[in-house]
Amino acid sequence: MPILRQIAQLGQPVLREVAGQIADPENPAVQRLIADMLVTVADANGVGIAAPQVYEPLSLFIVASRPNPRYPHAPQMDPVAMINPEILWVSDEKEKGWEGCLSIPGLRGLVPRHKRIAVRYLNSAGELREEEYSDFLARVFQHEFDHVQGMVFIDRVESTLELMTEKEYSRSVHSHA
Ligand code: ZN
Image (cartoon, rainbow, N blue to C red; front, side, top):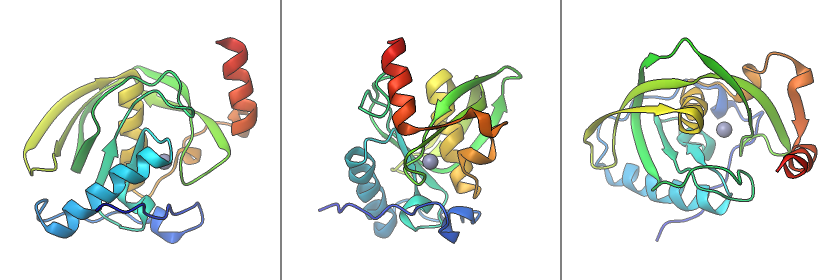
């Protein structure tokens, strides 16, 4: 049975490490980690989670976009585990959007991201996949990709004036909805 993993909070050194590549995606420990991350991200109302966030410095993350209380307008998709992810191409065009992070509770920041990206990764069966993402999914991928590089979203916020508490963020989202 998968178990809920504890989520590392900002200040934990594991969040600042460059994660190591996974040699064998079919290794049972990797498969268990993926299963645990799937239940952990769902439980926390996340739209993605990276292995370093559960104290495993490995190049692996889950993208699991779906509408939830933290991201009411997120697109619905089946969760995908992405192993040893790479960014192959990015659009020149960037877009700013509000992000939060399970490792930085209570805070949102306006983060510039490439609007479109082309990526490559191994899925949980160890098969090579190439995909293009735009808008919200491109944003989630870039956010999680940062985690496996030891970065977090506040590193990319251009001004502290573009930070907001979660509470103020929810208030402004609801007033604009
Ligand atoms: Zn995060």
